[in-house]
Image (cartoon, one colour):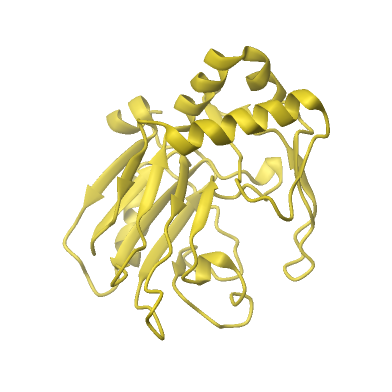
Length: 239
């Protein structure tokens, strides 16, 4: 709780187990987190297994491939009332090669923008600044909202962002375009970025900070990498 209150992120390590999912539920309850995962790939426990897959509903989506994932926060495509405020990523089986993550507290990124030009931060708080189109395959509607916003329960700063350039629409005005360019530049070189390649039993609890993932096991026919994801509607208790 102290680490998350300071930097929105805490790293942990436990002894690897064949099935860590029951412990992940207990872990979440200890921090008063409300499981928010309604994803089609989530089981009844609300936990999603992220691994290379060609299963219906997963094939073609980057989280279930070996491809790299650019900077994003989880649930950036959700409606504002279905926001993701916190998450756990738990590594059950690392990739044989690659699969590293970068993490960056979104509060730091907000400060970088404010230092550069406070108007950039204000532009990215507009309620219509970023739109994600509907996904017919999943039935997800269009999602339009801000990049930075105050958590409605605590007032703490939260972020909704993806660095992808396809299937998103930014507000079409010069200030927004400058702000987005500044944000991308800041993410490319921030010295406070944490870079990690998790081993089995290691994971992260965070208030949905910015993160990415490198590609992995490019030469393997099928990767064994398995990461469990649990997402929550509220922030870590005490933060």
